[in-house]
Image 1: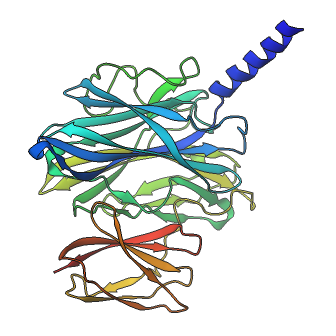
Image 2 (image 1 turned 180 degrees about the vertical axis):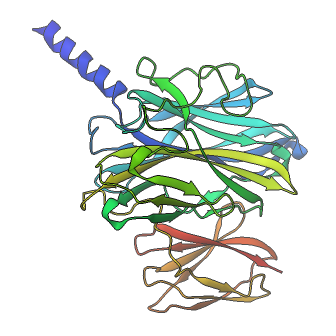
Image 3 (image 1 turned 60 degrees about the vertical axis):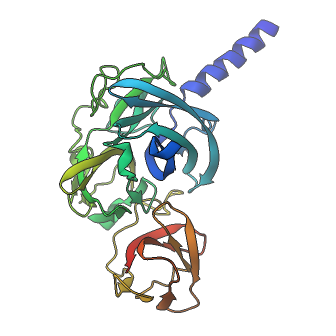
Length: 377
């Protein structure tokens, strides 16, 4: 009897660690400051994971994850980061956030990689695959931060609505030029090694960065540039990041796709981020229909003027859903919080020093639903 009970427990444990539960994630970095007379540069590393709880209720986020940090294709450091927050997005998805500071040598090129299995049940990719999150930093002394994305990278597509546009609205607080491209998601781990050991070396700085971690294997009829196959077309504006899913058909399935965001300053590449995305098609309203994540593009966006400004700035055309606006500096520190009281316009008077700032528009639940860069001179 004891042996039987032990076998059942081991079986449940095996199922749990190999369960297909992940639908996407991000790995980004934010400049914090310098140490040791500038020889060391400190960044905040932020990892967000998205989990399917509708099909895999028995598996949770890892309490700790290991990030590989590479310089000159060799392992510079393995950073273990603990889960800091977990947020329920809908009856189908939750978001887990991992965050920690990392100290890097000044003037160096770095690559950040995290791999985990297994992907949830997608129609377009083979079962029991893991995926990798990837981010590239061209020079640690540039004090450059990754682009800020307004929304989580999980979105629901109501097929009967026809063609839909989704605005990624990636904002770069360093004023870098951003270029968007649809690419293949990166492979990482499998059912035999759901939490792969961080390799000591990588073959390439840019994806595919290792023979062990290539690109996701697609099912027949699907590719990286046609991830929906015959169920809908996908295009993206390389300059604005506006993605269009054209004429989606009813199929009641999830699809995995991925975008690559490249940052340029003075025509020089400064950083790259790979972002795997989950789209769920359906015919009727389901438990997931919060339009979570990539919000459908709207022409009714707030108008901010003048910009640049000297002391006062007016924010007009505010949707009724906006309850407050946060003002942040380039390090991500909140400086002011502007309440909105039943008005579609507000004037903000700034006592902050000249420089670049970010406005974050929040709904009544505190969710960020839009951002806007402003400059005080």
